[in-house]
Length: 158
Image 1: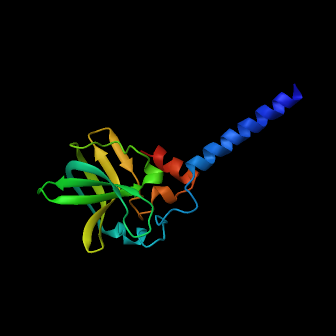
Image 2: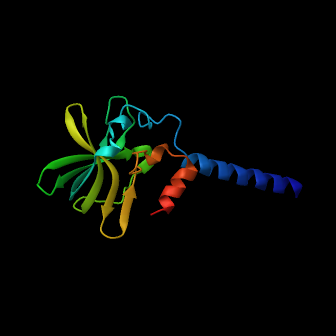
Image 3: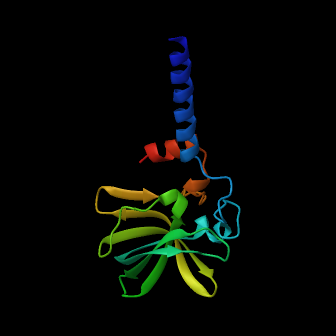
């Protein structure tokens, strides 16, 4: 009986710790670190936004050696093709809540990578009820670089 309680308590602790480590950002962020070369391209003081239609959801590798990320190919209001970088795949998972053909509004910062203009998203809005935030507007801090408490606070502030 005592042994069963110990096994149960250890199991609960293991599940709690496993959940916390799954929620936390990995130590090696694969080039997506807050102070890394890629994230230094995001300029929170130069925010822009546009509306457009999602043409395709793509896997991106923004800079050589980086872990894969999630991006979009969009057509803006002028019909121009825009490549949008959203964030690392290990943080976002397989579904970002938007689909091909949908009209969305994207807020973020323009950057040039390998001679090509890309839009680094901070927020994506679809309709009246869907919003995906991946960076703080005030300073561009990526959500994937936040500790679990800070991330929970930001997600609760919607």
